[in-house]
Amino acid sequence: VWESLKRLQADCQDLDGKVRRATPIEEFAERLKE
Image 1 (cartoon, rainbow, N blue to C red):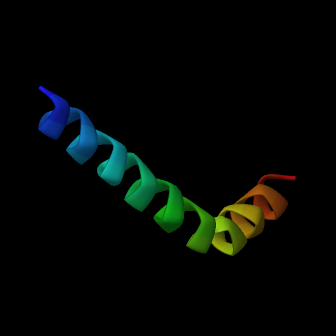
Image 2: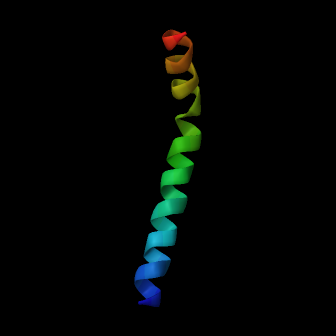
């Protein structure tokens, strides 16, 4: 159980890192919506 939890945490951190890298694209999309 602990190992799967650690894997989930690692996945979440990886996703968080990807989201942070994609932030400029998201900002650009938000500007297009406005």
